[in-house]
Image (cartoon, rainbow, N blue to C red):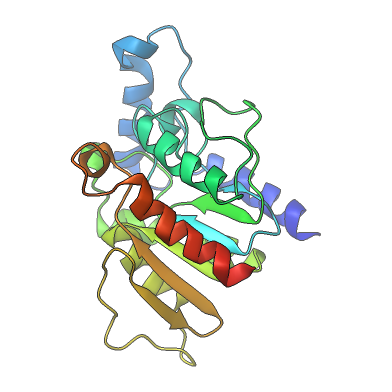
Length: 226
């Protein structure tokens, strides 16, 4: 089985997962109740697999699907302003074919980049429990093992901590765990971990994260794989 075929098989496994009762109930409730702006749309309402180039050397790691973004569209960082902010930066760096992410099948293609998250279901209040995170962990482990990863861009402290857990090995331990910060950079064996503030509206609307700031981190990822 090729790497692309293995990722496709993993996608199907992720999409069928019902391991966390609380998350299953929440994602499906949101898909039925809907937001007024999307009342005529059919929500995805399932776990969301990673998305991107099966030969990606750069992995962008978020937190979890947005309730009315990826939980609606079925693709990571798609259908909300956080995704538009992220994909615009990826497009400027040459990783994405377009700067907006509206829905699956909208023509967006990623080049040398894969976007995923440590938690695959939209969690209430955007806060998964440690047990829910741990049940999802094998999916991220599998993606990282199937991709020729050289750089991980962690969007936010949650993603940073998840990346540290998944990248650390007995041969390359992370003790003490490196502190998160925007622009933080640390080598973990053959992989470089980069930190960025999350692209949530809480950060982008307040100016805590600007396009130039995100471009700096994404541009560094581009340098590292050039």
